[in-house]
Length: 445
Image (cartoon, rainbow, N blue to C red):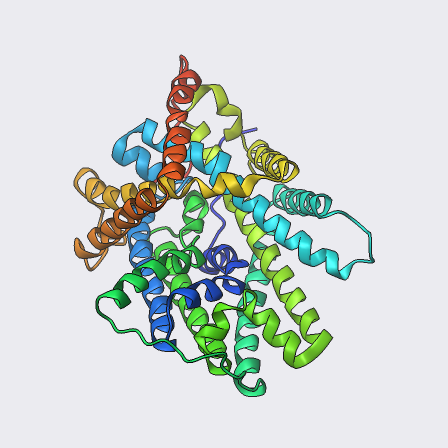
């Protein structure tokens, strides 16, 4: 065992990882939620474009951070360097125990629900199938980076092509559905702006995960140019696909119809293509869920791995298998904890309480751009944000705004999230102990 991970990832590996996480199962559900808030096609498409712009600003912040600090751990490393070890640990605490495992368990359940439809009746329970999927992709990634990144490249390519194919089929083959009622008009002023801001919450949920590949920065061959550019390319591709598929939806149904159709794509294909349409959508969701599962597992193991470099009593998570060259212990822990949440079956409620911490850490990540520019001036070879300081300032303020909205709209849930976050403080001091690891973080540039 060692504490080093090889640099063997490139531009398209990063693109595949980000697409794999972002284009999960959300795009098959979120459009209906957006249509419930916004009443015209123009406003709906504007919301998806704005979601891409906000995500792009965040991507530019992370592009500079990953270039300045090309280390495995992503956000953990940035917050540790900017605000101290305890801040980084608290991010890792929430990411490992709640965000990562909860998201992994949730996607596994979606996979199981659809995969069960193609199995003989009565074969396999959803929980058994979900856990089996987690173990399969965990074992695949433990076996070696070449397996994990290869399957991710294939699945992400299939995702992109699937959305393009769906867009084309809906545009050219599907006839419009009759409107159930008149569209309600909205203007970019007053109430319209308020509703647009409200719609950004589900939209940005659909864009979530654009920074995933930065958790593996220490394993990229070129962190000065290829990694930052891959982050930008990923979000541009995703935005184009999201706007395209929503344009296709709006070409065949009104926003009012979309709002009352939770699974829009599935409803369209089943209504116009019958049983074969249902099978097409089942296959599309299974591929999408598999891509998200593999991405979450591939990047997720790097978080306990990075935290272990600075935390003496869990240093074993930082071990790398000598032959496989993968963080086996971290992979096993993530897989087992996600499986526990699947067995518990109540992880959705836990995730509901984490919006507070999510936007808090994004706010701090935006601020870290300013802090690290002063402390660690980047060399001429590093990626720098052209729109500094406007872009990181906008991203930070936007994250703070959503943080305030989360506290205002759901104060009890925000309080629970704050208490859960605060519980990590005594854990941090207990785990530090004496003789904290003095090893240099792998992949430090």
